[in-house]
Length: 373
Image 1 (cartoon, rainbow, N blue to C red):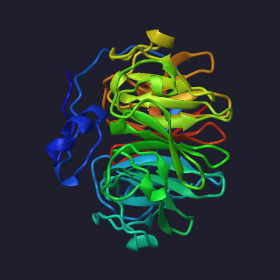
Image 2 (image 1 turned 60 degrees about the horizontal axis):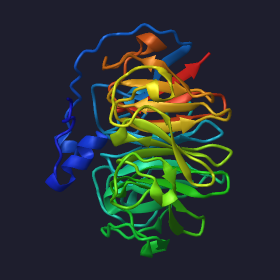
Image 3 (image 1 turned 60 degrees about the vertical axis):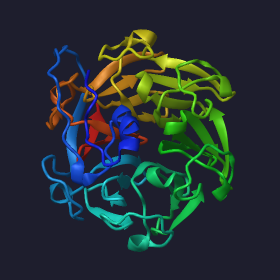
């Protein structure tokens, strides 16, 4: 079984980060080692290209397309005008990418960790992972190792919405009285309500626009794979969330290798995959298999897209529950642009979809684009 993807800096974070397959320290990050898998032929109308960054080179350079550098981009969101926002986890910054691939740094300074609320380069993050964009252009960031939720204005002004730096826990409450434990993926709905995958608490949290935090599903520090209502449900290191127009919340349940769904009434069901059974099979419902899914997006008609990290591919779940592979090949890692079945990914982590169905994926030190025809 593949268990070690990155060498971590602190032992007390090792187990969680291995399960989530996320990097912590840039100085110690190592490339994924893939065990070659059997290629299963499939058809796809998707085409993959690279928007920015270089597969074989890390850094923090602001530039255009292949001249730009990222250390390890993670969560991302796309604005209606095509502007892309990305959290660069190892650089501890928030980056901005135009539709033509011009990359700039919106907030934070590369390599400088902290928790300062301020503008632009004076702001500080400590391994930001998740990112979401609301209808008014406000960005939300899960600042994982600060155990906080941050807000970033379109001008790059950073404030803390909920949680207190360095104080991990599971308390519900408002503002700094609320607590998180290594929060990762996040999403925001049309009303401005924020949803957070509170990863080490094994819960999904909900934050009102005023900063009031509650627990939507799961019970803090109780992991498992149980479907059920609210606190009776169980997750195992949830890594990402997405929300549709009807208020349904989708969860990449990383440690269970499943995709879960939380209805508007708080009822949790398993949409695809089978708990604790990893693999790369396409198919409906429980017959589908994932291998540490880490990113989620949902489009306007209800298709759910999954960044299937260790399978090194992008999956699609239709509104009827049928799962297929959109791009990449199971356990065939690399970096190759081209038609879906021929494309290769190093380890896709974050994913976003625009109004036209174009997908954006963070993959190693690059940002990829997948167009569906």
